[in-house]
Image (tube, rainbow, N blue to C red; front, side, top):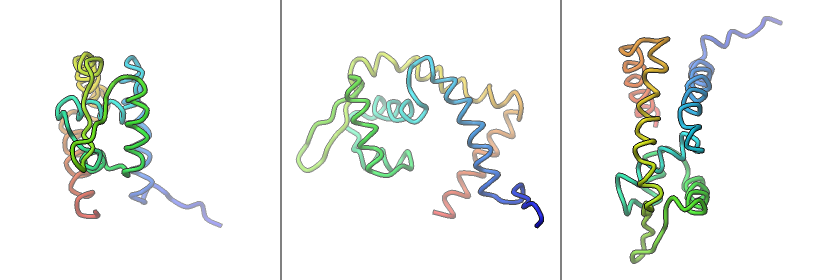
Length: 139
């Protein structure tokens, strides 16, 4: 039997790149004790107090049940709170979360230079553009 050539498979290529980029992002956010996804969620909540779990789910491309688990974890750490406003649940940042914003911004800003070292900034931006376009078309 011939060994499969996974390099011609978009799924394999994107997954391989994702694992590499995830490792870099995890290193950047490690000093905050947060995964990149938790950090991105906090950045959204800090920038949009009152955002709903549904909006977070849509912006982060994760299921509502995953968002609920993330919110439970971040609420237990004192980084956000949820409260009902009529039929809606709204997510609010805490002072602790707002106090992390400068560090969150610094970690996020550290990502592009890290992968630009290997790929070049123009390539990084073009890959992001093409990937977002492809995701929108497939969705």
